[in-house]
Amino acid sequence: MDRCTPTLTAMTLILTPTHDHLSRTRISVTRPASGGRVVVGMSTDGPDQRPAIRPMLLSSDADGARVSLIPEGALLLAGDAISIEVSVGQGVRLDLIEPGGTVAYAMDGQRASWDVSIDLAPSATLVWAGEPFVVSHGATVDRHTSITVGKGARLALRETIVLGRHHERPGSLQQDLAVMASDCTPMLAESLAVGPDSGRLLIGGSRVISTVLLLGERLLSTHTGTRLELGAEGTCVRTLSADAHRGDLTSVWSQARRQLDIR
Image 1 (tube, rainbow, N blue to C red):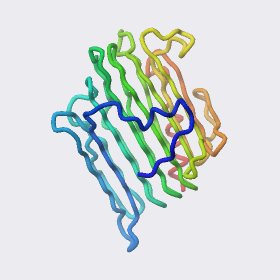
Image 2: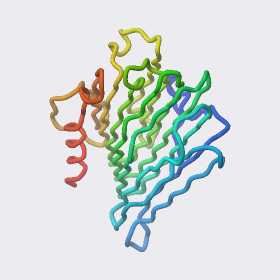
Image 3: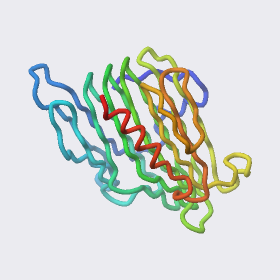
Image 4: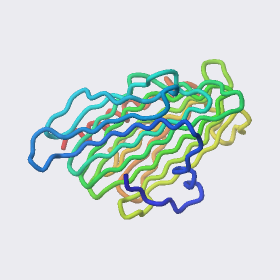
């Protein structure tokens, strides 16, 4: 998969492998030259003794596909390294769903990683309905996402980070996001490092970070969360809360989906 080279210091960790036990998942959707149903490529490889994410095709037609990301084994444990590569071809749509959330468990001083790379061809559409990602006390996780957006491509991404389980102190998380146009022009770059010793000024003492990111067009008016309008066409809406229910962005996510579904 082609990727732009990050130019910001905060983004340099994105493509740096941190573990020897890499489990890699690849998903691609393309439109065949002869027409008809899209071609969906799916593969998973890695050490037999390590858990992985297994893609399962739910449906497909001439316009796109719907794929579920099924975890095989307990995720995440110390030393786990998950890599998910998603490629959506020109004019094709892909819907990714997760049947449940992910929990990073205590790691006894070790680390785990979760790396996502997304490549959207011109006029491609990706809708990824992410479920909560819980960083338990004692877990240390590097979580990096790199997105390349072709001309006219659109993306709706939902993400919920939960720092610690119920009545538990948070684990440690290094999270980086880099969004770039296909010519490598930066569209959005974020880097966040939080842990049990983080000051209240960092995220206000909150333990849940909920985000809806819409790329390719601006989100219509909403009354929930803090909005960030990108210089390119796109909107990021985020809430910080004590629990996932209070920071719920269901209405924002529904609006983002509606905007991508009406065309």
